[in-house]
Image (cartoon, rainbow, N blue to C red; front, side, top):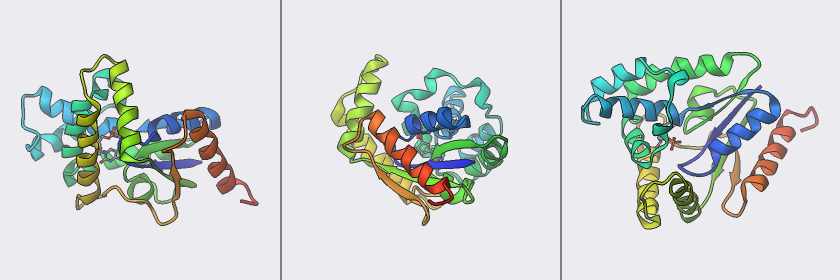
Length: 209
Ligand code: DC
């Protein structure tokens, strides 16, 4: 079984992906980490984020087995949004994601273009949304918990800018697949969101669903 979860920054898709994968005994790939790793490689090499060629080369060397906690920072998320708009970066990461999904027993992948580009054949597609304010609040609390020095207003601004960039890029923009089911988590806590997602998956995969 392949479950595709897409949605904007801090919508809760990563947590849902992890929980669904655990529940169904599937592998889980947070594909945002791939783009974050590319952005970090560019910055670590002292290059500009506008260096498309270097970003594309870096994307060919990404290995999810060696991801570090540093990828989770707010700044790297912003940088990832920039490099992820480069078609050559997306091409370089395409096969890795498809191979991951195709490996038995199946997988949950979360990102922006999983249901539309990476796994259009997914058994279940969920598009997770939440209001920008709710997402900013969650991300703020998460980053504060990691000891990062951030303000909620700045996070909301960044989220709105990132939404716009991710939605308006020419290649593989953030958009719900036609056959995706929408899940709005604005008023749902982690447990309620998981219960709702589980119901969606069970409805989709049950013979009577
Ligand atoms: O989900 P995230 O915040 O870790 O993602 C970081 C950035 O990576 C996001 O702003 C856009 C990009 N991304 C993408 O373009 N396609 C994906 N499948 C996942 C993430």
